[in-house]
Image (cartoon, rainbow, N blue to C red):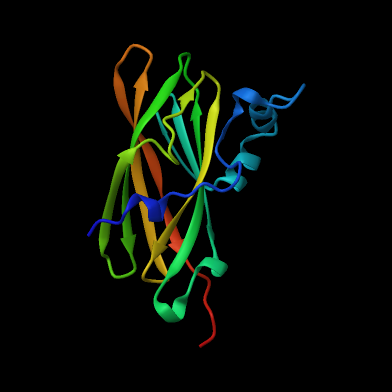
Length: 171
């Protein structure tokens, strides 16, 4: 079955942003890379690189949005899309494959992310936060973005597979 996009996309206040507008005197992207890969890897434990595009994901279970007694568990995921190429790229569409703990698969497709089709400058990145409800306490997500290059060509950028696992609770 197919889930509606509204259930999978919400915008947390100010979450979607582009690093092209860094604070005064601070290049946030460079500060993170200069600190070494270990820092970014701990912030975003799931990553996939396709050509010049790296997609990083962190995920958090949200107990306040979950209702296990009603068969609903909810996670937020933070995605960072980095452009390591020499030309801007634009995210056109997304495709998610979401699997719950009963191996039921949902495919979600749509234009952009959180209502945007961001243009990501060379060396820049775009972050957004979205969410996923499941009828089981565990599952996983994986997907792709269609990215358009400045010459009009398109490429598929991999979104890394990541688990959705609720913490164990005493019954």
